[in-house]
Image (cartoon, rainbow, N blue to C red; front, side, top):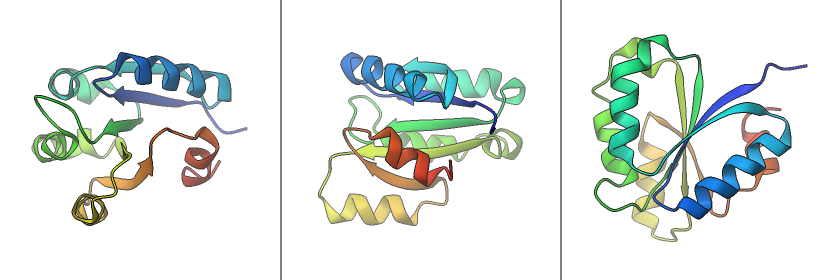
Length: 129
């Protein structure tokens, strides 16, 4: 049996955060989900606690006010390598804008762009579970 994963959910929608947290826990792949309704708040947490965090999978919404998913990635890139090495990022979006899709694919920090709403079985396949 594979060890349980640790998730950070970053989304400005409280509804999406609630639903995705429940789906991930119910799926049995995690017991640990930390939610952030602000990308800046998540970055601050990573900057302050990143060196002590276990391996984390971040599910990052693309479209958010204040700081969108790509702006988060730009700031994430400035974190120490030891912190970045512990983190896998999947971007979530319902976008059909080919520029966003190509930008996500080109980023070395984004594992994949997943469609919203999140389907846990699809995520499990991407995680090789």
